[in-house]
Length: 155
Image (cartoon, rainbow, N blue to C red):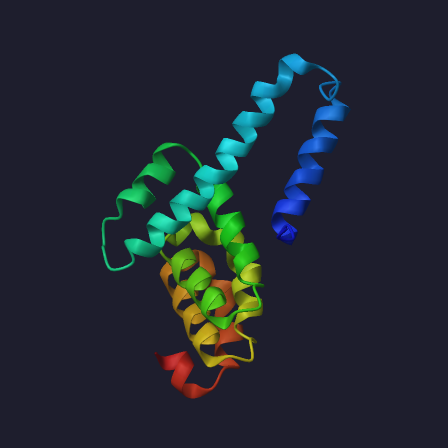
């Protein structure tokens, strides 16, 4: 049996605590609410998968759908978690995808700034690019970018 990922484990604990705090944990009538939360979690995963496939498109259908349904925060938060993944490719991809959210990814700036110190160059490059795509809201990142090797700071 596969071990649950830390994100799914934390989400599961949070959902369980929320249901019991609101007196919903013992009521069989609230199963649809739990199923809705699980569907929403799967939907965020599906959007991230769609973003990966649409990487080369300027006008991404998945990105538009995420924004239309006001789920930007959920997807950005999930990508921030991916910035801590053990696989460098996943970390770089998460940074790249965060950049596509532009100003909607401002909440990811602390994680992207931390990614600038990643031991892998591909992750640092992707994080620097994402910060550049965020735009003027990322002005606080200029000092951090100035401390990077010249090749990355000028890219």
